[in-house]
Image (tube, rainbow, N blue to C red; front, side, top):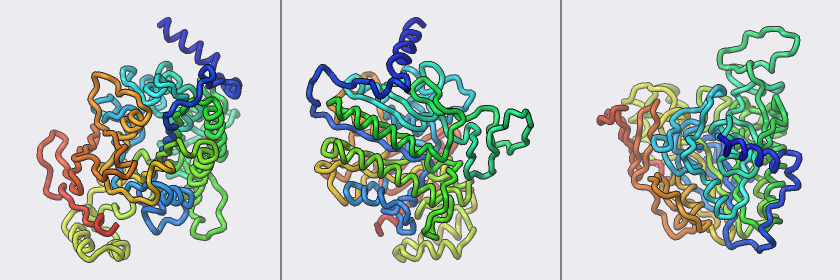
Length: 476
């Protein structure tokens, strides 16, 4: 364990929060290598329909919509899992959970994390000369060698897991509502069983806890400031950089943002969505100011919306599971009215013939659980105002970024992602065929083009309703 002690000591001395402004990213005066900067922004529990460019009913994402107009929008882009930790592990390794060992969410009490024999994107790019930073939600292990500083990130600022996994003094909006952290007077509370009161949510800067409990209402501002600081430092140094931002939005609890002037945005979810959009806009503005021509900015989500949170959850757009419910047919007809007649007939057939089977969003392999919004922005390289129908996944971020950086994939590994550079640069519309989504707690599925098939957990053929054809894509 001597190496671990030495590493902890070096990281602690070099990257203590108060020393961060003094960190020098330069490499002996060398000029910037012709390698692109890479910024990955991952939203949390954001629905496909929460992006205005995807779904006309959403009108509170002007910065993301502008990014779509200036870059490429992916309409058939998927998370590798429909829950937090497995999706993030796949993003950073290019491998499904059945390969990288992360098939469930890590808890506050978890002592492990992303297996140490897995190589992260940050580790690969760090060895290739990149300055690396992670800002936001980690959720891949928060003890010892599982900490971001030991997984390839020079700098870390954020929370170690979901922000509903610890109490705060500003609880925000949630179902069920959770109380603030217990006061020191020793009074006992009787919170709902889904609320955490034993541990106050910590905010880390590298290895140091700099705030506990976290003030959720100020977290977005702090993330924007730290992201801008890192982008400025890395750009000044002349090194290419990797910045990975794991947003707290749109996971509950939603921060208690004051109501907006627009009456449509009085709903807490819309207010939080607008706050997230503003945060992304600030990061993009900083990139445009200092490194616009040489930076790939990739925005996507970790999984679909958490439907059990009712009005505090996002929109799956057209993927609301009409094939699996008989409820609210009048609402369904209204939402289908803009689609072609043949699509409406297919959807209504599903309403009439298939039984109820729960949510079609987060924690399921139904389309709304893993089809996520995705945008790519790189002026002069990624064509502007293009909609891509290629079947892609967060698994593809890993091999694509490594290829663009001129680095090599870790040896002796099987990868589930593909290099999507040709799609990004507008030279191809071909992505995966097929694309799998398998998680230990839910029915695995596999997509072949615009068809999806489900099978039983033991791999035997599933029921006939498991095979669906998404006619809606013809209307995009």
